[in-house]
Image 1: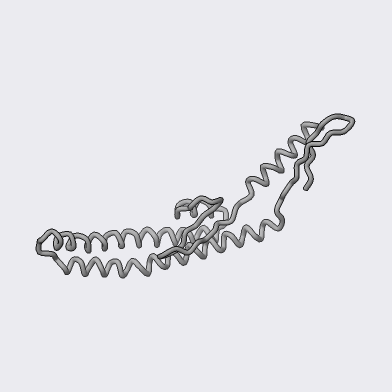
Image 2: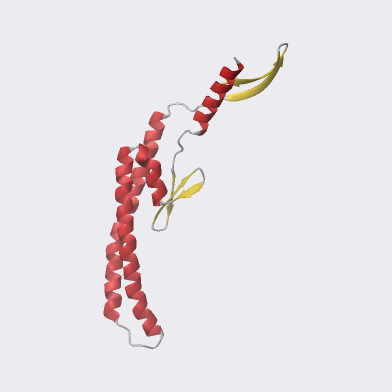
Length: 158
């Protein structure tokens, strides 16, 4: 009997601790910051977390792709702007056409990055909504140590 009670207690505690947590969204300059259980989440973490929800997973994969493309374009644009600026600051003859091309690349990368942020936010919203619908109640057991004429024991109320 003791083994059965201990097994059930262990199972219920494990289920309560393993319950999926919502992802918190915080608006920051240029996009959103995502947290789960107080820890910041990267795009890769979001993808891994959302594997269980196909609709959210598909959307976050698109967001990840757009984010990667925007990062590459933005990095290239920044380099094309930075090189002529460095040359000009160093006293050389700067190629301002190159800087203009870099500015154009950044201008192209901004809407792609915005699209990635929008899709990631949508995916998080879909993921969180699916958690709310599957978790109709929250399991909160109470544990108490009790003593009676037969001895001491652990009780669990839920």
